[in-house]
Length: 235
Ligand code: NAP
Image (tube, rainbow, N blue to C red):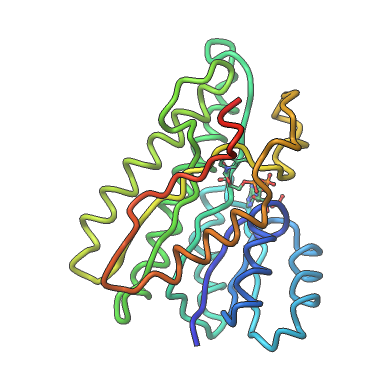
């Protein structure tokens, strides 16, 4: 039986992905901050017959990440796929951005992923595995008002490529799923100001289906980066 570890599973893309994988027969290790949402998701998915374990972890706190993941990994499931999905956005000018907001974006979208990989990859190595980092077309573009987000996702792409090269000898594959706009709860968060048309965006279910396809690639091949855009393009 295969196990996937999904971060940011309480809502948005992560929630849809947890449902997609459980319905496809995967066991789940889940995390986010909102324990009540994780608990109700586990309850909802009971009828899939899958084993589901979760642990609330605040990825914005670098001190909390190692112990949190040690606890999650100690719950009896060994992941063969890790989906680093949790992420945040902040809109506004780079030059007037407060330092603590900059550090929050970088901690959430880059440093926490380094910390998670440091905990999860050693336990994957004996059987091989796949790391999927959820990125954005912002990694490849300079979007005004989205500077810190663009920088964090560009750095994540570089991190993923370096990780893939280093871990190849341990049969660990690493890839990015690069997304255009997705109609998720990120657009409702306090740190994002936007008036984009959400009806033109990808659905979270479309992204979840794509993540499952990436996870189910044969172990002797890897899609190093898959870009999924709404057919309406970038806006
Ligand atoms: P979302 O709807 O805002 O969901 C974010 C998830 O991350 C939630 O489960 C949230 O759970 C978790 N999270 C937020 N802060 C956290 C923290 N401090 N500690 C632990 N978990 C935290 O976002 P989404 O749109 O699904 O985004 C998922 C990924 O897709 C992100 O990496 C994002 O950059 C990427 N992406 C999104 C879009 C888009 O248009 N939506 C486009 C390209 C890429 P809690 O609040 O319970 O902690």
